[in-house]
Picture 1: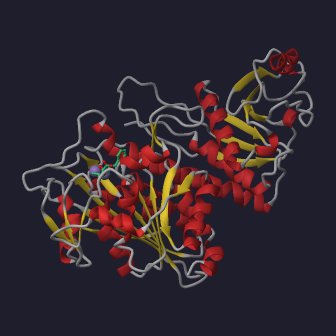
Picture 2 (picture 1 turned 180 degrees about the horizontal axis):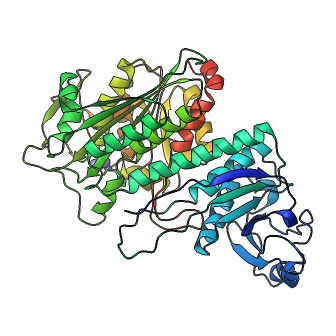
Picture 3 (picture 1 turned 90 degrees about the vertical axis):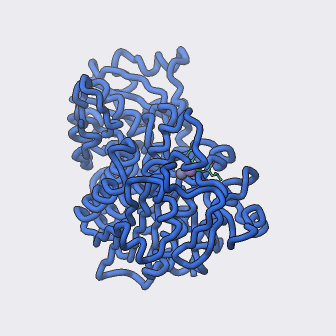
Length: 508
Ligand code: BES
Ligand code: MN
Ligand code: ZN
């Protein structure tokens, strides 16, 4: 198979626009932009920028683009690509990341390998934040959904990217390096999530996750079906029993010697390598998309690797339960009762509500291993897509201080999320006549009852659940986001670990 991504060399460049030595300069363009800070730009290509603005062809609307040549102004780089960035005052790091992605994807399409991204004054984005976002963007753009077409030409990768317009300093260089690590981790998660179910079985997922994690310096453990049975993880085993592929539980540990406090951040990701629905089988239409039902797990693995690479001074624990959900002859049936590792009994009313089951045992295990704060990431419910659409993840949890900390991390990471309620009385929707509770609460508030089920396994710990069923997969291509796996959640989790000194004080 062809390579899915390649990390470009990214560095700061303090030269002026005319001196930058690249194949293409990407310039964020704001509404009513006169480009006064970029001497020569308005004159380039015989005044085409101003002319295009005047005839209404280019207004700086987010992510529209205008390509011009720099002849006549004597620049070293022959081409400029203006990318709309909206109003300068409203420009965020998120917009800059997307500008960098849009421009870099266009560069690759034009088979150009060396880009410069010129950052400009007039926004309220801090220099370090901007540098990181651009480094993330150019790296994230160096990704191709794993083509298995034997006839496809090999991809053209960006070799080099320059972050210009900010000057050069130690902290800025660190921000660029951090951005590259975060971009690379995003790509690693996308590559795993795009992988077809037959090529990423639970066993292979565990191995690939272990390889990636070990290379980053994490402590790695793969629990096989025997160990999982020894731990009496009846929920994980119950989901797995319909498949001829055995389950796995991947456990990753980041244990730095210089940890700031005694918190242990527990990250748990749903790792269903394919979700047929089981005996409560899904309709045929779009079932192929259920190969991405391990996106949460992939995000946890990639984020843990980035946390290790960045040597963040906080203990982190990653737990990813991995299995297929298949309707085999031994599959769990509606009406069956399973016992979780913690001892709680669950009546299975719909075998397609399998994510909450595997998360239940995994959350318990993270607590058993000493986690003090929990975040789980899961493509859990179709209902969250109905509620929030395809661009916003649902965020559930308690206490408020922990919800706020994770919400802020999603905002800074550009992984938009929105708080959802977890009122206790929704639990009535999944009470069972014969077990502690059932595994489905029906259609009303489906993402809330799903979250409340998971909460049953969080003990008393601060816990947040991110339902990424809508955000993990892009159905339509955008200028800044090709179709397919998005890598949602990766940067959020790393950002959360980076912010640990702040929230360790406020979140109990
Ligand atoms: N993996 C699905 C959720 C999903 C749906 C993800 C659409 C991405 C897009 C999950 O396992 C599932 O099937 N959930 C059920 C729960 C229901 C049976 C209570 C759902 O949402 O229908
Ligand atoms: Mn399902
Ligand atoms: Zn699922």
